[in-house]
Length: 363
View (spheres, rainbow, N blue to C red):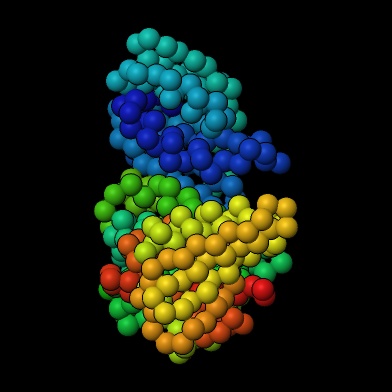
């Protein structure tokens, strides 16, 4: 293999693929990035066996070929260079990397030992704007579970029907549902591992359209210059809609800025009390309260537009902050049935295309 390639393009491609390499792998070749040249195209690949990325580069090709080299080491070397081009050549399973000012040789492993990052031969199910998907991920994925005893909840649920795509995540204590307008005819649903979702969020860099291709047990997100392939999580996602209250007794519209500040402060007083913050909803105000036997008490009264009866509810303050930090509006509405029922939080004053559910804590 012998090629010459733009250094900036190579940095970008390497940055896209090497992040999925785990710090510890039982197979040494999984610590490596595959550099492959075929059909006058340079392809960078990395995989952890559950997820893989192929990144496509242009370059001047003198000889085709392939090699795998340690991804972290290569990235450390490349990211400190400032030249315009880099020349790569393989001799006896050693990668020689050279610019006008620097050169390095990296011991490699034969490309024959590298697992194939497959192209998903499935059905193209929809196209979506990259920035829309990136925003949706940031507003939903944090609610997914880390508990491997229920694998289906460790991913983000995609369900599309009638021109709408919903992204849903829950860990049984909170839930996020985001709705997007898309051009899709068939009813589809699948669950993507949250690790893949986070990687997808990282590599989306603009408004370019993303194509999603689905097969029986794999999914592929096609972005400009790259493909991200992943397994999907098998199983049936819970009927989450049954926990969303249909009616409420109390509704409060509150400034996000004021609520965030009050809840952050209250959080200092909750560490010995299961992060428990009490919200008391009365005419024209919402009270925030937290108690600590060691530190003392905290109370704050926030001006609010309240409709319905007086009410109260206790939340894990961290769940409340996670929601407020990504909701994307200046005001939120809090809908409450009672202190033992889930609370519903939605953006106020903008398109209400996202719903958050937080389960209450006992006072």
